[in-house]
Amino acid sequence: MQTLFINIKELLQVREHSIEKVSGEAMKLLPKIDNAYLLIENDRIADFGPMENCPSLPNAKIMDARDRVILPTWADSHTHIVFAGNRIQEFVDRINGLSYEEIASRGGGILNSAKRLNETSEDELYAQSEVRLQEIMQQGTGAVEIKSGYGLTVEGELKMLRVIKRLKSNYPIAIKATFLGAHAFPIEFKENHSGYLQLLIDEMLPKIATENLADFIDAFLETGYFSIEESELIMEAGKKYGLIPKIHVNQFTAIGGIKACVAKGALTVDHLEIITDEDIMALQNSQTMPVALPSCSYFISIPYTPARKLIDSGLPLALATDYNPGTSPSGNMNFVVATACIKMKMTPEEAINAATINGAYAMGISATHGTITKGKRANLIVTKPINSYYQLPYSFGTNLIEKVMIEGQFI
Image (cartoon, rainbow, N blue to C red):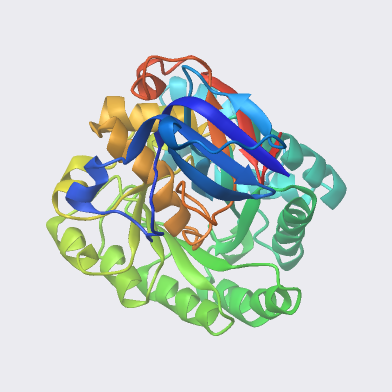
């Protein structure tokens, strides 16, 4: 089956040769073709170029994209969309002046979500989660990473990861699963950290590996949660089962966690609202991708990741939603891209690079996703008629998406 888009106003993120990521000054460059065509064959990108070179294909389905922009779907590399219920009351508590830490100390936060999740059946958890997955696909996300971490028991973590596996089997979107048993210490292990680490390493990990339930391993490396030493132990244990580290770090404090993550070969370090010169030095010349989560900063009123400092230091940066019930209850990557431009002073080119090719790298799928390159997956956003791609972050409250194609099919 062939689909031929013609008269495309702007075809974005066009790369003749596949690349893994873009860094520093290169993030300012977003290659595009004006007045372009794009040919899709089955589920792959087959050809593209200026309209003057458009082939004549009488058997192809012709789609006139006049006045429209086409770009790769978003790659959201950090979400927690498998969760039960909501934490709306905590939203009101924050409005009334309670901090994230105060809410957590009262039994809220992650432990609140863990309680709800362990009371919810696997089928009900799946039903709630697929609604969220369908929504983010309609909003232009074509690849997503989903974490566990609201179980904090053997049964709860396995339940979450099995739901993620079911979603992966039933939907065309690329899904990567991350084991985040080290999200918080359960109440019963509050004074027995070594006991919980033993449960995580000796019981959870072998069962996860047996059922092939995860691609990555994560930990909340933060003051009051998991220390550097505890996180290093978790990263090493995961690597023995082939799970690559992707770590929460530097959300509230900088305690040397980024250097430890780089040393352990972490694919990503996520949050980075607080960053030091030492952290930047540790990231330079590494293969670790910094990931910013601006809608989390927006929602709980904490500092934004200093994107300008990171990019101007020659580093790459990815953007993701952190979709979760407590601190970022939205999976809308369009809002993330706009917020990165408005609040983090990223250019539209940098933000789109961060949400496509660098997001794909942050999930280990840059060979198949994230750019318009021959042979890559046909995952596309087709906008409504707009003036230019600058309108995507400019009109931040407007849905500018007309169609979404995933694996060569409109959803």
